[in-house]
Length: 88
Image (spheres, rainbow, N blue to C red):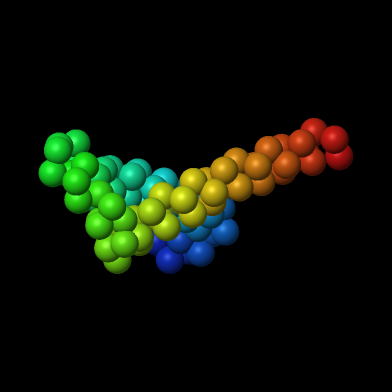
């Protein structure tokens, strides 16, 4: 049975781990942003212009945006790799 360190040093395993980490971060940040920064109440609506500048809301927006871009880029990379294998 191979050791866990050998398994984790595999580049494919590390790539899949990074991809899954971005998915989890993106998912959690999107839901936390709605819950913490723009709650669906009258008070949430009134406070939303003030909350947009809060550090935790900025960090959550950064995570949602960059998580989406990273996930999209990984799909493009996978598509390009598949095309390269089909063409070559």
